[in-house]
Structures are given as structure tokens and as C-alpha cells.
Image 1 (spheres, rainbow, N blue to C red):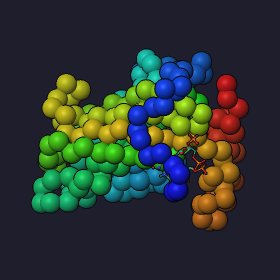
Image 2: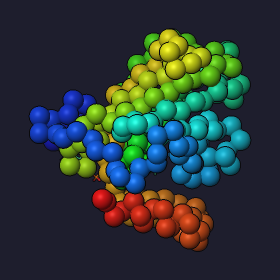
Image 3: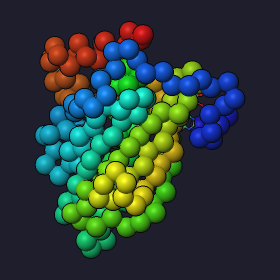
Image 4: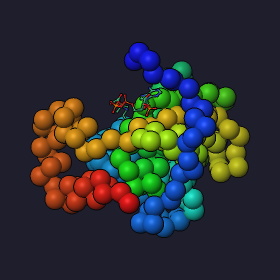
Length: 194
Ligand SMILES: CCCCCCCC(=O)SCCNC(=O)CCNC(=O)[C@H](O)C(C)(C)COP(=O)(O)OP(=O)(O)OC[C@H]1O[C@@H](n2cnc3c(N)ncnc32)[C@H](O)[C@@H]1OP(=O)(O)O
């Protein structure tokens, strides 16, 4: 990581994020991007099962109920799980920009403990784009969209091509995904932007 600036403040020549014309309509549920994703996949028993909805701008909302399997301290959510919820919500912003992007940097503030049983209401928003970098923020509130803020993150995602996953993922899973024509179609559509 030599010579790389790690600041999460967008550079002066960064531009505003632009909602893609084919982004999901406001209020539309953004389905899971992968059945075995710990954040959103239905195939992970103890996963977060996060359900994300498109916002009106380059933003999304999501809910996640903290369950027993998500504990760190007795009766409280594990901080890493809460960071995962923020990360997953932020990851959905790619649908609004219609790019594939992965987390480059994620800085999380933990402001309140989150008890098991809590429904965490999450929002994420892209704030600036500079070349392949997407600067964004996310917030998790306890109990409702206007509840007290429990967690907040500033992040920078980096746009990648499908090859990022093909070249780096384990062969078994990559082959299974590539055998599904629907998944390939969705992924390739994201590579043609706009
Ligand atoms: C399909 C979507 C799934 C979503 C799931 C939820 C989100 C996730 O959890 S994704 C999984 C976690 N993240 C990862 O595994 C990513 C691992 N990291 C990588 O693969 C690489 O480091 C990657 C792709 C981020 C960047 O590598 P590379 O493509 O070679 O780009 P690189 O040239 O180094 O960087 C591009 C720009 O980003 C900047 N950058 C990259 N990483 C960072 C970082 N950590 N901090 C600050 N800046 C960074 C670089 O400085 C560069 O900036 P500039 O354009 O000004 O020169």
C-alpha cells in the first residue's frame, strides 16, 4: 500500500455521484446479489439477511434484525457484525450507479450498544465519485428510521470488473455462479456503463 492516500475525504476534482437511468426505482427492493453472501444471502442460516431498498437519489435503505448468532458481548451485537451490516448496505449503492464495486476502506464509529432483538435501520448514500473510487457514508439507527444512531461509517468503494471475482474467488463457487445464465447476464450488464 505504498504511496496510496487513505483519506476518506474526496479530492477537490471529485464529481457528484449520478443515479443510473436504469437504477432500481425508488422503493424497489434490491435483491440479494449472491445466495451465499453473509450480508444478504438467503442461503446463510446465521447471515444478516439484509433487505435493501432503492432510494430516490444515489442512496439505499435496509433493515437487519440482530439475532442470537450475532452476539459479541452477552445480549449485544458484535461490532464486526454491525460493520458488516454497514458494509453490505454500502455495497448496494453499486446498483444505483450500476457499477460493481468492492470495499476499499471502511471506517466505523460505534456510538451505542445494540441489543439482540433490535431492528437496525440502515441508510447509505454515495457522496462523491473520483475515477474508480466511490466515497460514501452509512448510518444504522435503533428501532426505526428516526431512532438513535448506533453506528456510522465513512467508506470508499473501488469499481472493479467481473474478473476481480473470477480471478480471485475459489473455483468451486465461481464455476457454480458462472453456470447460472441469469447471474452472468446481470453481472455483464453492469460492465456496460452507462
Ligand atoms: C458484488 C458486490 C459485493 C458487495 C459486498 C459488500 C462489500 C464487500 O464486503 S466487498 C469485499 C471486501 N473488499 C475486498 O475484498 C477488496 C479487496 N481489495 C482489492 O481487491 C483491491 O485492493 C482493490 C480492488 C480495492 C483496489 O485495487 P486495484 O483495483 O488494483 O486498484 P488501485 O489502483 O490499487 O486503487 C484504485 C484507486 O483506489 C484507491 N484505493 C484503493 N484501496 C484504497 C484504500 N484501502 N484506501 C484508500 N484508497 C484506496 C487507490 O489509491 C486508487 O486511487 P487513484 O484512482 O486516486 O489512484
